[in-house]
Length: 141
Image (cartoon, rainbow, N blue to C red; front, side, top):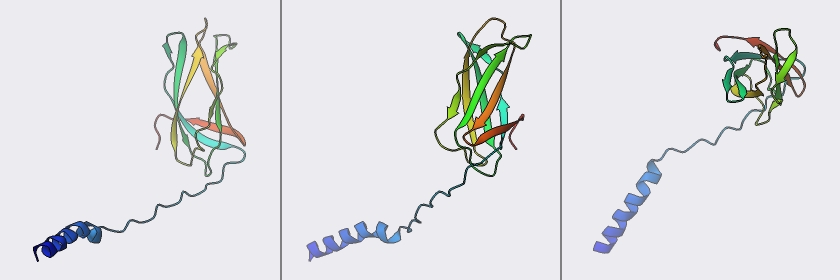
């Protein structure tokens, strides 16, 4: 009789959490958002470039403001001297991790070698299916 009571009590203790647990909803499948064809729109926050060793480091935060995803966002940075001649530039950066979804913010770091006479920089944006129109902003809304 004692064994039966012990087994019954043990069974109640082990099955109680199973009976009281809430059923989990199945994970929602990610929605496919078609990519932008043609001109994509983005907002850019560019921090001031800083010299780190023998490199000029530029950090950009980019937000997709298009209705579609942006595939393979490509950035080219050019550095000019005071007479607007190209003196340096960063290797091309292509965002290959995943398409940038509408409203998503990504942070990209560009590194250019330091050259004498570097005065100002310009960053050009393109993507897999066209150009990207960049709007500089102070903060994302």
